[in-house]
Image (tube, helix red, strand yellow):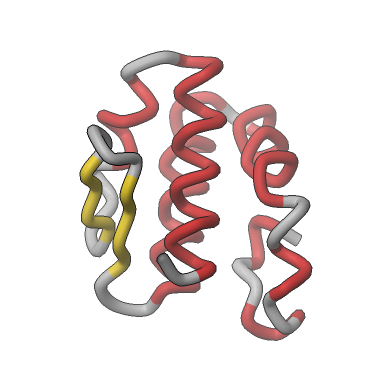
Length: 92
């Protein structure tokens, strides 16, 4: 799994721990995310940075800034492995 897919998977998992199955429902609305949640696998087809942004925006739309903070916290250990200019804006 590439780093952007790992970021998306961690975000979904963290959101699921807070809001339950709604997290997966919302993630499935994001175009470009291919999710096999039985295996906790996520693939991204398209612009990976933009798709992760849209995932964060999807949670923000429903639950506000608190959801963005949850997303940032979920990926703080791996986001630093991506060059600054390639990081999704909402996760900085």
